[in-house]
Length: 165
Picture 1 (spheres, rainbow, N blue to C red):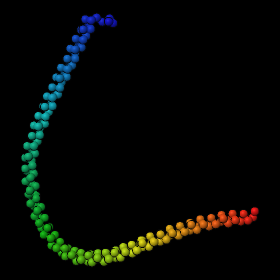
Picture 2: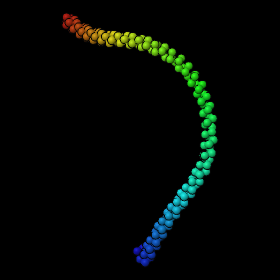
Picture 3: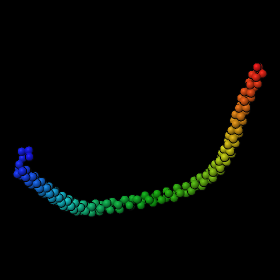
Picture 4: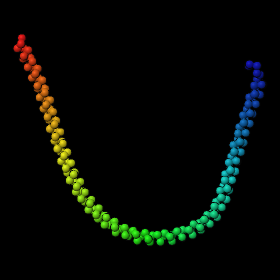
């Protein structure tokens, strides 16, 4: 066979199989190493997160105390502002009640005007529909009259031409 002996061919096949096993073995070893690296990274991340949470908890407690003290001061200021605002709003409520009554009166008047305009619009629409019907009839009559005129003209020409001969 092309200058390769069977023994050499068998050696090549054996070498190829051994090489393939080595590649598979190295691939498996690489996968195991990658898995181990991933596990170590995960554990490192967990430990780092744990320590970060502990440091954050300490800082958060201190921050929370400061925030609560600030909230107490803010609430006292808001209470004073709310008291002032409540008095102002009572006065505005009275003014708005008067304005609402005037607005309701005007709304009633405008509704009456709208109803009147709607009635006029309906009447005008009916008139337009009637006029369109009349216009359609007029056009039809004119068309019929025109057709009759052309027919009579044709007959007249025939009569005149037959009288000439």
